[in-house]
Image (tube, rainbow, N blue to C red; front, side, top):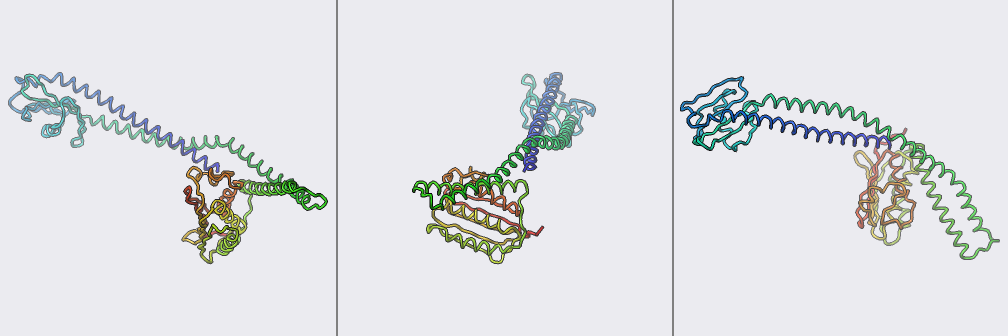
Length: 413
């Protein structure tokens, strides 16, 4: 149980760490990208201010003139209102033939990040409203190196995050284990107390019950009707307390892995058939017992405990069903044996359903029903002891279905 809690704590720590780092990584990446972009746009605007005189009508040459220099940081192109390229300084060969179509829908002064033939470009488009005759300029620069730098930075962050996750996983597991030590010690002390108290209280309770029987059978003591009722009530309460102590002792031994279990070959089909037949005689006329039991199903386990588990489920179904039916099914599937106990009783709310196998827990709508609150916890422990699984399906007011799955191949130790 504690190892399972430790794993959950480790998983939670890792989840919070990954979410935090993931959000931090996203914020950091976009922040750096925005800062770099802002700086690049500002540099382009400064360059545009230096070169804007090319847009003046008397400075535009009639012939097309493109100067190419691969080492140039910034490039620009001058176009007429008819989209005719008339002048420019180029640093990426061949870009002049396509740049106008790439920026055809760009707004004036709005920076555009474009990928062209493996190059990442930052481009700006400007019109000069006065004395430009509709001419416009496209300026830009290659930001491929910066783009690759950001990519490498992101890959580095991811690698560091993975390394950090591994470190945090070991650290979280270690810290979760440390945190569980005092809890485990407290739980062990409580569990030992329950076991010892349950064991020690059995003897005085037996003496108390025997004394009541002696008083009840003593002919010399003539009790009044009220006195006899008191003795009967005390015997009932003593029996209820004995049942409670037996349940606590069973669960305490189960927690400590000291609960003995037999591994005998048992005829499960016959057991379920005989128990349901006997149980049917105890049901009121308003409840019908239906059975669908597959024959010749064998199982290796503790017959006494299997009987107790089935009785708990049947008794629980009868206790919370006023009218309708109780359905019991037993079948052998490909890889398991499945036992189903279904009723049309009060049902269980979604809030109560997740706590149904907890000790002393009783559903909100059924607290008035007599019981110790240990029955389903004991049934759950018996199923787990046989390497099985028990689940429950229920809707308030529509009934409850318990599904017990037992391993088909259950070998002797």
